[in-house]
Image 1 (cartoon, helix red, strand yellow):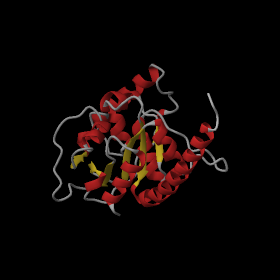
Image 2: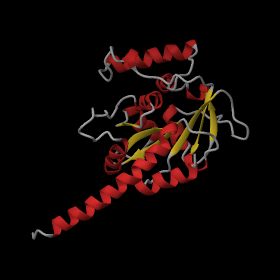
Image 3: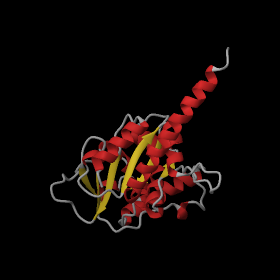
Image 4: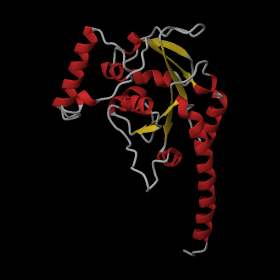
Length: 235
């Protein structure tokens, strides 16, 4: 996979203001990749850090957010399991999540001891996932490239809380997916309010880029057509 080429294509096609980020689920710290030793409040905080640097974050780096650690599929020690129960209880009692939803929140099944994060353009490993932040206009193009806008097929949902749950959805189904985000993601990442989260499985990236190129040509053709149609009417 040409990581740099795909990153450039994604950034140029969508007009991204933040670079696409890559993630790889690994069993140990890869040689030559720095170990993340800091403390962050959530797993999604690491996504923003990965916009500018490549690093390996072991499982315990994710444990301050038991929801994120669960969706990433890490084995949780008893203390983190207890925190997870407390988080879910809070979510359910305030009406944020329904009790019957909690057991159905997805998680990544691939065995791992940590995650390598970094900018896709210079990522040294094969990505398992690629993440992007999209505006509604960019998400429109993304949906067309994914094929979720076709009236002949079942609609692909845009997921919500927790935002990190869209990662296992995309990875396990090998299907590019989108999330509106969640209050935790908005708080911890400080991403702009008009951004949606998009997750592309690494193994589907080249096919997605090919589809994206076709969609961009089609949309430019229609833009020119609509501009001409609009110009034929006087105010």
